[in-house]
Each structure stands twice: as structure tokens, then as C-alpha cells.
Length: 336
Ligand SMILES: *Cc1c(COP(=O)(O)O)cnc(C)c1O
Ligand code: SF4
Image 1 (spheres, rainbow, N blue to C red):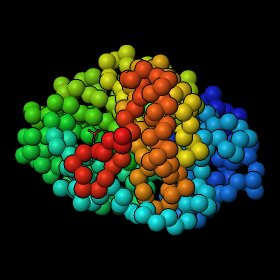
Image 2 (cartoon, helix red, strand yellow):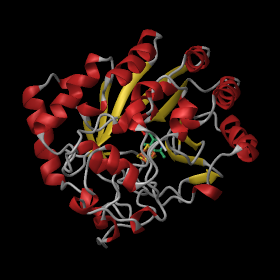
Image 3 (spheres, protein in one colour):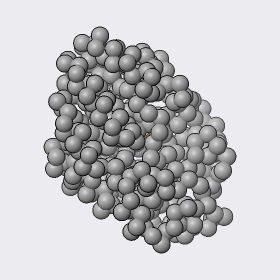
């Protein structure tokens, strides 16, 4: 078990070791955060199908002794996850209907999304893919060839999105091989990586990863996922700076979450902190209605009001686009 007296030592370890030392049960996390279990509405049943997983780097940014911390709320399994909310289901965005090959989603014009792996460094309780059947729907090595063949045949595709799970939880060798295979497909212009690792496990941003990314002959776009300015600690700042200084284009997507980031100040601070490290706010997503996430929902009316407040305070380029994902739609839907 991770011994919290040795945080400094922990952060000197490589990312794989840090990942094995991530918190994986409620007691250890609460003990580290100096929280009494009986003061929290935690639920062990909620972890059955979707375990608790929190890297130490992320946990270190949670305020000790604060049961209402906005980062804690994103990762702590609570009883609300077991409540039934109408309209919530296991495939809220129609992932299964847009699957063209195992692990290959072709939903929008010119862009193909690859589910490269089911694993993540952190388990976000609001995750829209928390119930996704990863074991038979990911582009594991055995299916890679048919995925690559699909891309070769579809010359209208100009961008490939590596997603998951988290594609940066693949090791460097595997990533490098994927990048090389994509580079060989001449009609592709860009490789986009959707990842939360720079935020939750910044040790993942190594020189070797940078070499793989800068070695791509196609442009690389990295879209990180950060919901609150408190997530941007000194380790995250260094990781973002390293990416940015190596010419990687950085964007952010957030999910609008009740009691996490549903205040104008919180969203404005997030945009400011991201941009201070070269990250441009891209999307603010309305919650996708996955079973177990109903307690995170913020209404469309409130969401629109929040964006209005942001527009009154920030330059236009720091106001993310408010969007929702709709099963069967031809693009993400802008909420105006
Ligand atoms: C979100 C998403 C994309 C990318 O959409 P953008 O609007 O270009 O960011 C592509 N494919 C799928 C299946 C998606 O869910
Ligand atoms: S990092 Fe993304 S895919 Fe992974 S659990 Fe969090 S929201 Fe879901």
C-alpha cells in the first residue's frame, strides 16, 4: 500500500510504478485524505463493476479533511451511483451503433475514433463509458490490422482519434507502432489523442513519449481532460509545458458536473489556468447519460447561463463550446 509519508519518493518513480501504487480502495484513499468513513456516503457496491482508481498525483491535489472537495467528488464511489434515473442507460451516445470494426467508431465525417485500450489511470465516476463492454470492443493487437485496413479504404478520413479508455496508458513501444502505422496512411492529416493522463498521471509525459509524438509525420493534437483548476498542480504544469515546448497542440475538454465545476468562477478559473500553460479550452460537455451518473447532471438551462457568465468575463477564445453528444447525430450538438 502507498505510504503517504513518502509522497516525494513516489513522484520520483516512473509512471508505470506510480500507476501500480494508485489508490484502489475507499479506506486507503480516505485515510490518506484524513477523512472519516462514517462522514461520507461511500458505497462499496458502487465499486463492483467500476472500481475505485486514483493516482497519488491526483489525490495529492485533493484538500485534506474536505468531504466536499470537487476533485474528490469526481472519484469517490457513493450511494447515489446506485439510484435509478430515468433516461440513463449503458450506451448513452450510441457507441455501439457507430462501430464499424472491433474498436473502430466512425460516426462523424472525416474522423475515425479508435478505442485503443479499455484502461485508464483514473476511474472518473461520471464516465460515459463506465459501462462500455471494453473486453470485446477494443482495438487490441489482434484487431489492429482490420482497423488499419478500414482506414486505408476510407480515403475521406483525414483525422484519427486515439481514445479509450486512455490511449496514453499504452506503453511507448505500442504507441510508437500505432503512430507509425497511421503515418503510413497517406490521406491522414492528423492524429488526435484524447487523454486524461497529463492531468492525472503527469509522469506519463516522458522524453520518450515526446520523441514518439514529435516523430509523427502527421500533425499531432492532444486533447486533455481537466474539470477543475485544482487539478493543475506543479507536476501537471511541468508536463503541459514540456508538451507545449515541443510544439504539440493542446486543447481541453471538460464535463459539466454538479458540485464540481457548475459555478461561473470555477469555470473561469479553469480556463485561465489551462491557458496559462498553453491549453485552449475546446469543449464543455453536458453529461452523457450513463447509468450510475445521474447525480452529476446539470440542466441545459443552467449550463447555458454559465456560458453566458463566462462570455461576460473572458476573451472569446477562453470560453469553451457547450456541446452534447447525441446518438445518431452527424456531429456533436452545440447548445446555444
Ligand atoms: C467526439 C467524437 C469525435 C470528435 O468530434 P469533434 O467534434 O471533432 O471533436 C469523433 N468521433 C466520435 C465517435 C466522437 O464521439
Ligand atoms: S479518464 Fe476518461 S475514459 Fe477514463 S474513466 Fe475518466 S472520463 Fe472515463
